[in-house]
Length: 114
Length: 114
Image 1: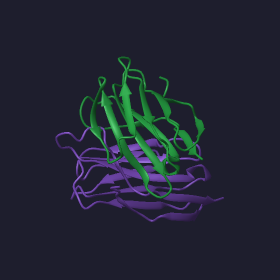
Image 2: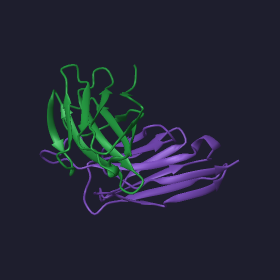
Image 3: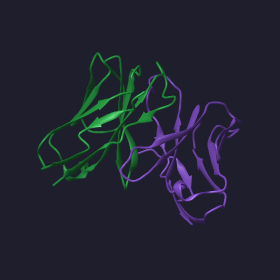
Image 4: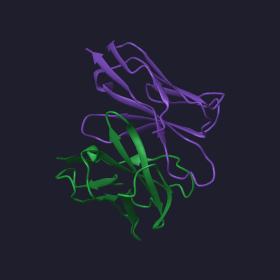
């Protein structure tokens, strides 16, 4: 199935460090979303982006919609142990008939050492 | 507002059987999308329903079907189960009338096929 290229696949960092992850696509997206999933749960929406170049923050999280509309970035500042989980990027391409369908990246597994 | 609910949370079935999974969207949300999540393929789109109509469908065999009721609750059905159908099935609801926009996920139904 179709997937976005998300990197890195995993990260093991020290508490307090900043984290960056990104997502790229070969095609243009109109919406970029970032989710976090913890074991036994569904993905939780963190940030939604709708315009090329848009920079949006949610607490310690900041995400950007790439200018080319083919990529997006998520930064987490001053990581804490509860940031542990799998982070997914997701994109939606707006064209006729393509309703309700998000394309997901493979996920970035984040582990934080206290 | 209550979140997306899915029932059952866990299910064990035998090859050849069929299964029905249920999803109740966030109150007021009319769009429901279904996804299959596996370690190998990640999150893959199954289909999307809006106002009791399937508007979009992913690349899954006809054994996977769904429907939506007038109260926006949705069900998906998998017939003639195969071992490869073992996965976490997630539904997501959205307030948008068109496009994917922000999707909110339920906790998922973990299906194991033996």
